Each structure stands twice: as structure tokens, then as C-alpha cells.
Amino acid sequence: MNRTVCALGMFGLFVAACGQARADVLLTGPDANVGSYSTSALAGVADASDTVSSGGLTGITLWGLLGGANASSPTSATYGAITTSTPSGDNGKNAILRYYLLATAANGQRSVVSLGEIDPAFGGTAAVAPFVAFQNGGGLLATPQLVLPGTSGRGLVNLTSLQLLAVPAITGSGGRSTAVLTSTISGDTYTGVPLWTFLDPSNPGGTDQIVIT
Image (cartoon, rainbow, N blue to C red; front, side, top):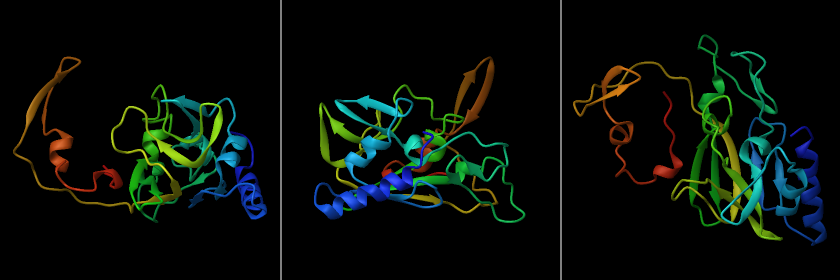
């Protein structure tokens, strides 16, 4: 998405002041496209490369809304409109994998999306990418919606904010699990513990947490 989304986001604020529409979702964080977006503003900044549809909804991909792009080098601090940072002395390679979006709905429900999950250079290669919906059928939605196709319980209606955040770089190791399994992949046999079991899926609030490896 090669355009200045921020300016159009501010246009959304101007329209809201005139009473024709209202700015519904606020994007904040280290990103050049920060601003407040109504569904009409989102429709205005989406282009053919970052517009997707799923389940009757149409919207702009999260990666497109952020203005994400490949880094100029593995240790680059910028990924298009996204600016990352790494503490002095820590490994800056693929710093974007420490970043995530915290989405919040009007009712307080939250959901987390890792940037590694939406960056095409890493896990963002799904047939339909996570997106912010602005249209249902032929008409604009009253408020944006967060849509994560193929997942359950992670989407949000009445989306009010998207915060681009990062976890600190960490060192050290955890304990050893005794609940292991074996799996053969491409002729090699591995022994380990299922990640979902290790994370304890019975723990509440799983949609607003992130794991950094």
C-alpha cells in the first residue's frame, strides 16, 4: 500500500466532525500510518493488493493497514511504515517478531495478533490474511471489525483500537517438561512437548496473550 494512510486517517476525523461519519478505530504505535479510521476511511485507503474478503465481509489486511514491507536487511529497524527497535547489546535480527497488535473492542474484549503472523516473510502466507472489515456485502459497516479467517474466538466486532506494541528482548531458559511426544518429519525423529499443552489452554484470556520464542 504505497500511499500516506495517516493523512487519510485524519480526513476520517474531519468527516466525523462534520457529522457524516465517525472515526471508529484508532491505530497507535511506532507506525507512520497511525491515525483514526472510520469504515469509509478504511475503504478509501485499501487497494487491490491489500483488500480481502471472507464470510461476506470485505476489508483491508492488517499488514496493509500498517504499511508493512520487507526490511532492507535482517537487522533493519524499519519494515515499510513500521519502525522497530532493539535494546543496545541485544540481537536485532528479525526484531519485528517481538511486535504485536493488541486489538480492543467497544465492550472491552481484546485479541492479539503477532506481526510474525501477518508478515508475508514469516507466517503471513494464509490464503486470506487477517483483516479489518469495513464492508458487508454492498454497504459499509457501522463500525470496523477484526477478522481472522480460519480461527475461532479471535475476531472482534465494534473494533475501537489497534495498538502496535512490543515485548522486551529476554534471555534465559525455562524448565524442562516431562509430557513429551515423538514426531517424524522429513525422515528425522523429534521428541518434545506439544506447544499448546505447554501453554496450558485452560488458562483464561488466551486471545489477548502472545508467546515469544
